[in-house]
Amino acid sequence: MTRSLLFIGIGNMGRPMAVNLARHGYALSVHDARPGLPDELAALGAQWCDAPVEAAAQADIVLLSLPGPPQVREVLLGERGVLHAMRAGSVLIDTSTSSVDLAREIAAIASERGVDYLEAPVTNAIDGAAAGRLSIFVGANDDAFARWRSVLDVLGNRVLHVGPHGNGATIKLMTNLMWFVNAAAIGEALMLGAKAGVRLDVVREALMHSAGNSWVVEHDIPSIFEGHYDPSFSLALCCKDLSLVNKIAEQQGYTLTMGRHAQAVFERARQVYGDDAAELHVVRLLEQQVGLYLRPPHGQAGGDEKAA
Image (cartoon, rainbow, N blue to C red; front, side, top):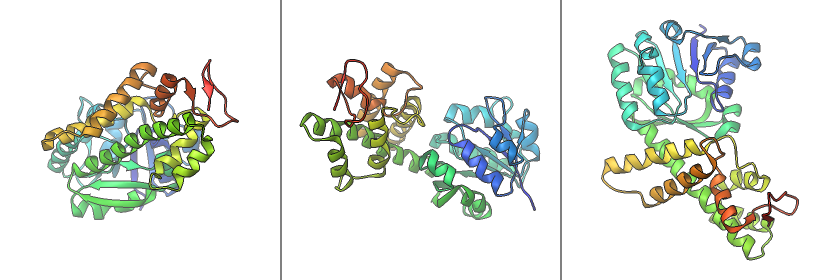
């Protein structure tokens, strides 16, 4: 039986996830704050949905990919919130990076309506979404997880049941804390090497074959060298996630020293470059402070600043 699926939010991460679901035979209706069905989804038989509340009332599955808690709250629980329209026996899957408190609030309301709820934030970037190789951290009860895991298996190759609702957000935000701290530290490490006169390709090689290596090293250094600073993720989203992770620690009764420092650095970059600037502008902040762009010899320097 073909399952009907309402997909809300076809941005950087949502769009490739929607494409994979359509390719696997789900009957897709799509809604986004920016109207218009991408040609790739139209070619796969997806339909544009102007009325998500009405579509949610008929859907077997409602799946979200939204920027953060305010958007999730409005779409699900607002005046035209789709959760209020969903029927018993359907499932809500939220892949957004949201908050622990909101996940638990949604879980309580979904339970009252007889709707299964999988809190399912994802990681591994746009490339992972396109390849169906996301890691997915699922907060849900055991029965709902077992019932709907097959949907998530289309999207990711590592689907981890991490416990009850709220744990998905905690795990996802924990991984983002590691990401952002690592990203800022990579810029500092590259600058140390460049200012010491070490060729940047040598610095990169050393990092990639050391205890300091990580997925972030391998993914982010090319973005720094190419000077685009990874436009797939904005400073506004970095700051949102760092605020959420620090809030978790506060609720648990302590302070994250690195979390607080990272939030301050990313907020400073956001103030200089704006909400929509790419994630690694946190490194550009250092480059401009020092007066040296971290570019291999074939790269291009900007302004009056020198290339390493």
